[in-house]
Image 1 (cartoon, rainbow, N blue to C red):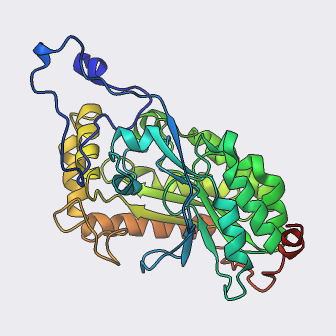
Image 2: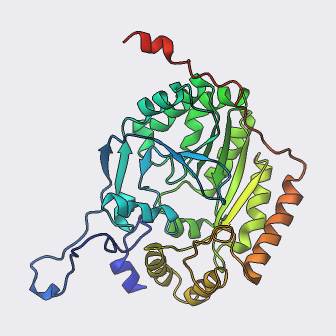
Image 3: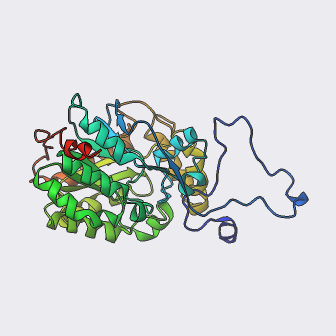
Length: 356
């Protein structure tokens, strides 16, 4: 334990900052005894502002329920060790490790781009996922309020939008979400990976507590906002035993539906997760690693459509069965939510545009 304390970055998920696979040159410390000071990383969160040309992403994956996604932020301070979005940070020139958690890219012109997109008379409304990559309610949102402005824009144009988050900050926007819900324009999924708080603090160090997320479901439900729980990702040997309890508690707090995925460790995430796993669970690390591999044909990195988020084999099948039975038992009586796309109005911004 002494070694872990000496070399562990408290409050961060990743404990390493691996080199970007696209970099031609690498910075390494080969002879530390020749340095006056160690080459330590800066662990303060940095906001990096950018102005993209487009903001709506078309999702072509058959594994995702929605066709489009929108991400106001890239990188995520929540620090979830398993996050599949870590790999995308390398396209911005950063590491999938600590860089992903401390270098947050903010798309400053997201609302202007969304207004332009909705105003296009050729746009056919379809539910947009907010966010498909990193959490739209991560800590930076408290000050910047880009997500809130996106919701306001969707309300103005009567455009359907789905939200997924693990942050209680979503309750700040209940006033807007409630109006959207009255027109059947919004559905919120709250991600809950388990109920053991000690595990969460290691697995997702800067996220809301599990209790806080359950209370978030309660507040959303009481406000008439349709919501569900995303039990994701399920980590075999670490969190899979909590599936039934998560769904039961989520249902008791107002969730009417549930979804799940099994963890997969593509690209740089494999090394990042393995380093974290052996530092935090040295006695059970091999068991967890082997069970993840068994769910993905002997590899932890699975990119096969159709199996990558559900897995295969006996362990994956047992997870699926437990999830299905738990959902049926606690949520079977609820109807499937359908978004309303009929009230969309691409002319909603015209009066404002005339002012210019």
